Image (cartoon, rainbow over all chains, first blue to last red; front, side, top):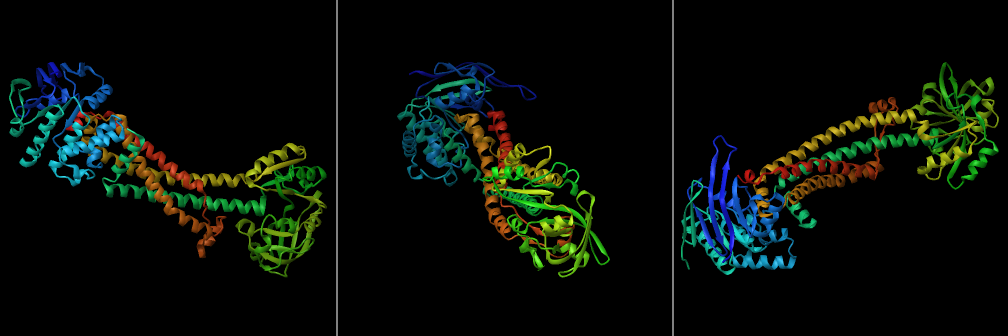
Length: 231
Length: 409
């Protein structure tokens, strides 16, 4: 399987506070196509920073993040916007749907930014909403959806444009058990069916139990990198 | 992302917080409504004043003796010779009518009261094409050509305590130093809208005035009315080219009413300052809304940029929201103002009592005329649009400086 992301000597130091914080320390990791990875660790271990840096939202202090043969650590902001749009899907903890758009419009949004043809965009958005079990909520705005439903729309949005990989920052943190399991089932199924690489940062044991790879960060460094066989 | 999408997103965004948007739009609505009302009232008042002055006093264009404007004496009256009539005939297609007048001072006395007055020697037939003098008679009748009687303005008649049938003694200086003196019977009393004219004017036929001032065949001015008032300056320019400038002078209404226009501009400037204050208040209201909106949506902006939305796309949405908010308010203001302005234009408020007296003392008609000029509506919409564009630059600036990481937190 081809390597989707490769980090080498990745470091991030926050210096804009009284005492500099080393959020990431020489992280060397490779993620392969179709992996379902959970990044775990205690609060402040650097999980979110790691996702932000490999997602091109934050710049590393040192090291490289190579995606599809391109080092995004040195990329200019304007190029980075385009790169994120074409290659990376995001699922946030707080769903972060666009409140003025319906479910189908939210799912289409990234494809809209990519200037995809309207018909194809609509077809794909409906297909994704069907995949996440929301085919009856196409024209419903986020405020009329439950938390679990909103997060399913967010997952559909992240996957609809077929990115190289999806970064999910604690996606189940705000969900009840049933909704969380439901979401994980959907993501695991889409991971298999669409062969999309999923990388979660999480505290949630329910996520960890489904992941085929679990990377533990402690104080910004990789403590463990474990692989599991799952169904 | 297409412009249509930007418009849809911006439109939907402004309705996310309905109450706030409605309050902002209402403030714009009232500002535009007030601005349109004040400006229409001011323009209406001055338009009416100018219209009255032009129709009853100056006309759009005057041909005078070259020295008359600087020294208005009968010695600087003029003969309407073939050269002038030939020139006017040449531009027949642009000229509606030209009217001869003698317009000169005289003392008017009735019993023990004497008052300075302005004698208007007119051709009643031609004058009727300029104004509706004969319809303004409040007592008696209007003069006819070759009449030897006079019509006195109501205010002057009151001052002189004279009425129809009474006689006035007129005394003045005529052509080439002769003493102009005569007794004239009052045939009618006329009400003139311009308070200054209403308290000084005496109308007599042109023939009678020429006899009174000893100025046979002479006039002090020839009033030229263009067929289209908008062509006044073009016509005046052509007349200037054709006329013998050593002897004659062509003046347009704005040159003759220069003092009034300066006063008007000064007054309009005062209103502009008031409107400016009004718009500054509106600008701060809009700015406050924008500021709150930006603070509320920082996380959302960070999310959108994380997903791949470019800064300029986000800035375009915010900018459009500002334009939508203010233009919707401005449009609502214009729609609200339109029936009010139109009603008051056709049925202006007539003032009464002390207020009317005070207005007339200031030289204004005791009426509140409202101009229904589309340019006023358009200019207010443009001003609001400009304010919105300036305010809309702040979110653009803010989005361009937004740090995704700090906004996410």
